[in-house]
Length: 477
Image 1: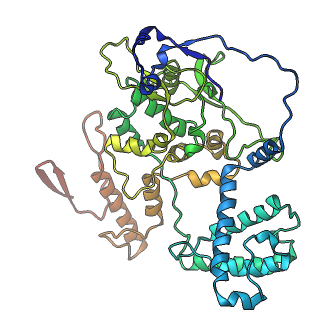
Image 2: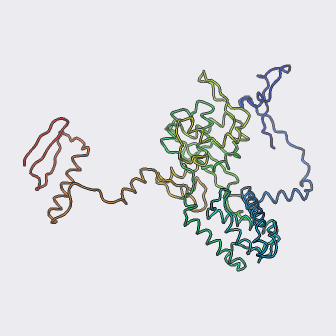
């Protein structure tokens, strides 16, 4: 682990004869960390020491994302559990004259297709319900990766249309995916919801976000990493470092801006398959008229923590009695457990209910896409922040209630009116004039220069009733 180039200024700490606890050391304010020259190691030559076979195997494992490795392990364990259960049934032995091997790699192609058909039809969740259609594909994909990558059987392509050896299994899988959908399983997708603009305002008003307190400033940095820079849940939050953020000046436009340079992401892993995928920095320009300008906020926060190392430092609870004092942060990092509950904490501190809603740290990314979408920005502008490389960005865009209400009104049946448009064309024209008159009188009309309202009365009207506050005047024409 690399140690930041900072050392502790012990001048303000107890003397040598006083004991210091571990918690005291971890709560050292970062303002008491002083910059020290970097100690470089001796140059041992151009090449590294010889690597061992175990090291190479670990490097090979790291080429596969951890979520993919976990999915493979889960699918393989599910297969083993099914085999144990199936082998306890007498039907299993009579079908092939032998029990199913626990290691799926020992099956030849014919046996593999035979047992996979029964496996995909018989598996259920632990509560006995059906797996959603996409989960069935993930299970088969996990087994495929194990057979192909871990067992080096490169000629096995279970899900490829051009592999005729598994064509019957694919038909069974297709049918099994349609069956849960017809019963309603997997039709309700659980997805994160965005933070609404009025909720964000309440969080500022209640002090959940603040430029004056350490916790409020830390909360704001976490929230806007999601909203402004589209962080993915905990994936980016838990590995982001302070040096990824730079405060620069656009000399041409005379404006400061934040430049955030992402590193390895879900869709930008690097390596041979994605060697041509470039990671584009995100630039956020200052808004001088906004007192809560993000450029000022990030510049302020970065000045209070070390410029190298983990971004989220533990805020210290101190009472600011003087305007010259600043929020203070510990040398210790905020734990991952606390970071995983940040968005729920924001709602709790603001007194906002999330009952019946799906709110998590991924809501920041959803808020980014939703805000830009509802403000009329193009998909290209949205993806410049979210870094989506496909149409998946549309899954993150949520319409505001006003848009949903307008769409519902446009597609609904016609409203019931007191006046029915039946009769001759001349009568219908007069009725339309009356509707226009009714609309004109009911709405707020701006006052003219001489405080006079002029109304054109249709020929079919013989009496006009005028009301103003508590006065009523009837005029016969």
